[in-house]
Image (cartoon, rainbow, N blue to C red; front, side, top):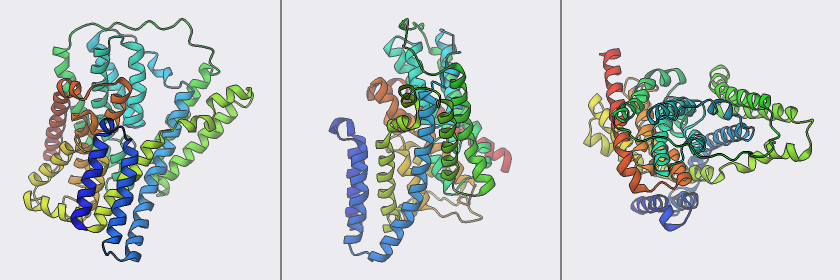
Length: 435
């Protein structure tokens, strides 16, 4: 049973990694893997009542993450349906490659920290299509958007799914995370940008936009209001958690409810056709449900390995290979997890780490201590090294049809450069603070 579960886990991950070749969506592979692993665990002789208890405990944790994601994705879709992001993006005018690169990269970096890296990547790719005509240049900008979105999401509790998992699980707090991870995240983006400032050549040719894009039922005032309510609602979530100590998804649901009421009042005087175009009941159908189901399946799969004991054994193996009672050992373990997240999705890696190590006071694994903040950075930014290593990368790959080999040749070195620079900044920062 023990070995069979590992084999099935690897097989499931292979199906996820090669979804484009197999023509099978990764959500389907993840769901099958999660359910099959739990079935094998129970059929292998585990006590049914104990297994069911552990399963329901994990489901409650997973549900809080999924409800959080559903709320956030709905809010972002509502803002996008109201063209709220154009209030910001329409102000980008430069056509110089380096200047445009820096503008888009830093805008992506900070937008990702407020929204999330996946949504930000989608929004920014849409923007790049309006600013850059040449396909190869668009691919290049898309690669930098992946790096910037993942770096920006790493230092915010709502910017990346893995960081959100650590935050919701109580492994890191909002203030501590942002204080310690901001500078390493800046370095992860700044290093490739500095390199490109001396090497990027060519010019930007903007595509010709159609003279009319159709009559929109959204007024400029409504665009601004949707942006303010949407982004304000997302920023309110950490504040809500701090004040009430309720799970973050409760704050997200409250923000969604307020936005829902605001948009219904905003459009109540319009005809049914206009209201159906931008109303939440219409927008909610656009939610990326397969991504939510993918997270459900993969988190169930990891939970089965945590319950069956494989993750604890992996932790023991890492402890044997690298002494995690020392700083160097923790740096190596966290760094390896980050690099692995470029090959394997960072969501299950972080979930595995959360199952491998306990928050023991007085160790590097205590709440808000060395390892968890470091893991938030490495798992969040390490996925940029390969285009399949992060949700943002997969989204950009799908939208722009970027080949895996092209990204490996043109972008992977830049992502690795930023990754190592961020680790160096984290180490120096910790040395300055703690000596």
